[in-house]
Length: 139
Image (cartoon, rainbow, N blue to C red):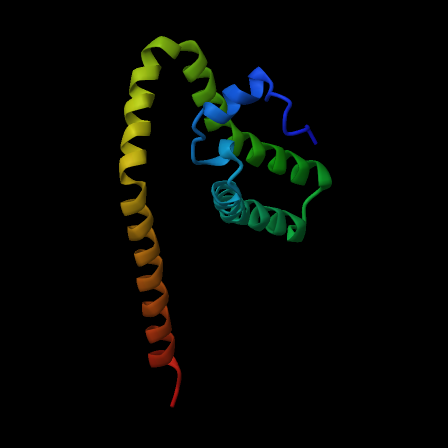
């Protein structure tokens, strides 16, 4: 601890004078936790087709070379779009930047509405599935 009569160092005065922003940079854990949960949910959802493909391949009566080739082909098909989009982004940086910025602005403005519609759609689908299951069940 610094004695009370000692002046505050110059760099600390500058830090104290600078207004802190809200968000992950300010040390607030909530935005980071939300991002982590969203990333986890997306990872789980996108992992399901991969797990299904691995299950089908594991139960197939094929040679290991065919299974390995099919799995490698599946991985290439799943990775190729991201690689191609990344290459286009790097190659056409100056032309792509304004378009990507407009897309980002649109997503920023409309993300709450999209999330609401998505959650509502999932709720309606779940409710309809429950109603159909109840109607199909013999009394």
